[in-house]
Length: 273
Image (cartoon, rainbow, N blue to C red):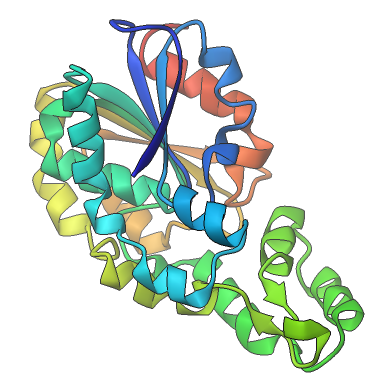
């Protein structure tokens, strides 16, 4: 597992940044800049070595081999080796599921967490997953790229979501038909394989422990294309350690559109604002 460190030297407060499924350290561009003088920053990049070999867009085979289930253990090991007893966490999208996993396995090592638009419930139950699933099924990859791009522009109004989906279309050897570059179409299977899909029961059991040690989870909830289902939202609101922050005029890609808010909420969480 690759970790990048920056910011203040220890024993400054530590924040661990975990990107989304297809992301990396670039997910935190501009987010970490205002934090450099306040935190010792650790950015996890589970796809670093694969991207070094294959480029930005991972292959289907690489997506099948991702070992997110070991991420919590890898983070804990890294923190212990660096004599860091506990840390704050930022989890972007699916990266938030690694934060939930970490909090269940190592509750004493998490001081607080800021998670963007994801819950411990199955991602496949969400509006965002259903939209992506339909887009994968309906995108006319038998057509040339110019026609596919026009189709996506007409059917996906949110720029961030459209850019993500467009980036995953490939035309091997410049020939028809097109194909998906990675495991986007198999996202649910990927999460199930990594034991990150059904987490709510374990997280609920830890609620009293986290609340007792005053560990707070701030969860930013997008207005549209959300990665949190209506049922999960109801369950989250029952937990004592969780605070839900609904964000108007927003979609799932809050790390792109609401960087300032993420910084503001993390500083409030760590009482450094």
